[in-house]
Amino acid sequence: MQRALISALRLTRPRTPISARRCASVGAALAPEIQVRALAGADKGITEILMKRPHACNALGNVFVSELLEALAQLRDDQQIRVLLFRSGVKGVFCAGADLKEREQMNEAEVGVCTQRLRGLMNEIAAFPTPTITAIDGYALGGGLELALACDLRVAASSAVMGLIETTRGLFPGAGGTQRLPRCLGVALAKELIFTGRRLSGAQAQALGLVNHAVAQNEEGNAAYHRARELAQEILPQAPIAVRLSKVAIDRGMEVDIASGMAIEGICYAQNIPTRDRLEGMAAFREKRPPRFVGE
Image 1 (cartoon, helix red, strand yellow):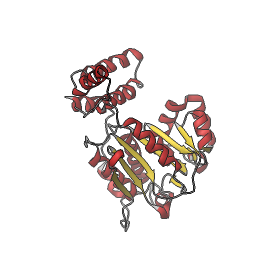
Image 2 (cartoon, rainbow, N blue to C red):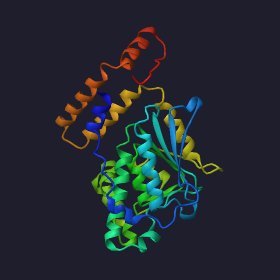
Image 3 (cartoon, rainbow, N blue to C red):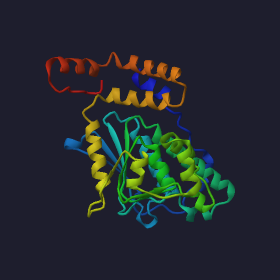
Image 4 (cartoon, helix red, strand yellow):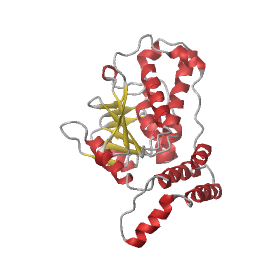
């Protein structure tokens, strides 16, 4: 019943059209461009998606997108995942955006199909049932920032560079940027950033509210990743069903008027009442001990 409610309320996941096969890359990469790792020990419950396409700065090419969609599909129903963390395996870059070299080889119809596929990918990330965190340790431009915007929380190195720069390339954000940036920063500021194609540092992005945290970069170039893990560790001890339902209530409530949003909150809250975790939370409070939530 719980999972049915989440499925009913969260954003509808668009299906990849059959015509997207026309976008298939001529040859598959020698190594996976997307790697998935479930952490253990004190980090148990955190799953990482590692983006590793170094020769193209993690550009959103067809193989990259296919592998990321496949990873999300496999992870979506894994009840052991409490936080999904996106990070780069390429030093100095998070994601350089769309693969324009691939785009140059496509006709107009193929470009339209691939853009729709990218938009679907961002919707899949946004609809992931558990909290998602992006660690931006380098450049996050165009589609790279759109990917980060699709996540719930964003952490950046102060020296990171990000922006929806599509207008400087004769384009405009087509994978959710025109919708998610205004919802994040407000309409006027989002318009200014998109119209100008301006780039922001991680520190500037935090000042505007685009990222939750900005941290000084370290010698290894992964300071944002470490801060993102710390943030994930704060989420891990909390009741997973309550966290998931709060995400549904917030995401869906923001898309409707407040009265409808309150109704959505009520539906979600009603589903949380019969959970074992709610009873455990009350018992732990009464007994003055840390709660032991099991996700039931």
